[in-house]
Length: 286
Ligand code: C2E
Ligand code: MG
Ligand code: MG
Ligand code: MG
Image (cartoon, rainbow, N blue to C red; front, side):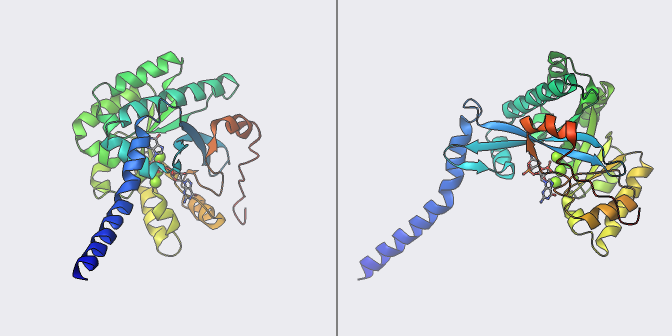
């Protein structure tokens, strides 16, 4: 009886382990060949100028639909790709693919269009990162103004001096730099002055907490940014009242489901032509 009990116990325990460990391994196994199998796609979400309702730029968001696993969130596979050393190749593919898209759309008449690409810290750390970006711009005959690179504070402050050298090289080519998820790091305020960036993207957590005293944080960030000559973008705007408050606080640009969800690349020409999917309600009382 004791034997039987312990055996059951063991089986139960091992089953639990299998359940916990397998998905991660399964995802890793599928991720390894996913790029060669053509399983990645880029989607784009517009950033909207809050006052005019015009499209400021398009953020490029990587999508993976595995035939085995289904759709996997970038929040899951990006960290895995970073750990397994796949992010450099994947990130280069994203940059090149985004450059191809924006050059097609600029050629079709949207001559000032800019795409914003998320850059992993691992990618940014590569010694040849700036050279890679320059060579991709060259391949597609794009000016630097066609590209905005989104980096997080964490990836920039690891080696502030080295980061600023790279940022200066990129910005000298006309490429703009955005600080993504601003406010979620620990050292934001002290480092902000020393980082050569153009745009602050206020993290969605601040926007969703904006009702009540939460708006004081957003107000402070916007004022600080203005003081430093930076443009502010509010991430994750979902409600009309958030848009109204952000406009009143002089936040210049907004992004979120209220305006538009991320769309596959082939939906973008239509979006750019018609703005039909971009619902930009007027602020109350104006
Ligand atoms: P992020 O750069 O902060 O991108 C914004 C995320 O918020 C996107 O999630 C977007 O779909 C989502 N979002 C936009 N508007 C709303 C809204 O109104 N409400 C809510 N709840 N969410 C909204 P997504 O596409 O799942 O990407 C998650 C993160 O994965 C990104 O956060 C970025 O850090 C990373 N990521 C995505 N694509 C790439 C890529 O090509 N390279 C790298 N290195 N990271 C990427
Ligand atoms: Mg981003
Ligand atoms: Mg962001
Ligand atoms: Mg974010």
